[in-house]
Image (cartoon, rainbow, N blue to C red; front, side):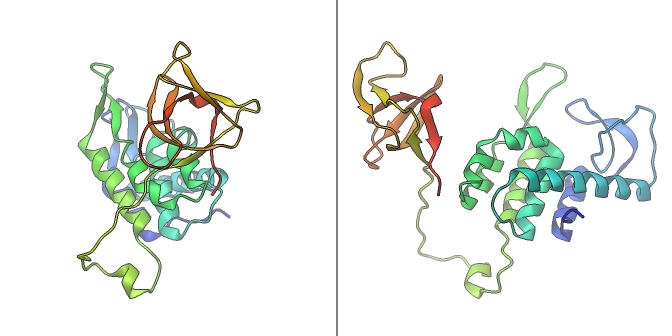
Length: 239
């Protein structure tokens, strides 16, 4: 039996999907009914609220199974619910291809809210352009907030009082060189730039920025760009 989404997650999905008992086109042009149900929906379809709840339970169960299959780290109930909501809305393909999943599976739990906040665009059926939608921005924020909602009884972790002394978290992700014969670091983003040095396999680097398949990297952990390398030969460093 699949793990069930908790009430906080269920209420989040219901809030943002809304209940529609007659089929309608969502902002992206997809025929939808009930609480965001899209499988096999015909334009003339109608359902009852009971049927909508049943369809939602089935859809969330499917989303939950998909989350379980691709996430390799332990999730508390709120984290599981937040990702299930995301998959229900954005699809499992977007999660499996995301930087969010790559970072999470290395143990980087803290990255999830900021990574979720990137998924706020839909294709405008009139223009074919991808545009940010206010509803998606609000939903991603709510999912991020749910992700951060701890199950702990520790009053320090659960306090809503604002600390007056705060610190920055280091957002950088550590990568390693995966090229067996070493990786050429160049002075710019492209093979026409000068080779500065060859980085041995397993050299740890931090990506500062990306351009056309190339990454500007920091070797000294000082925030400065030391050179450019092909991203094809960089792998996330295990936690």
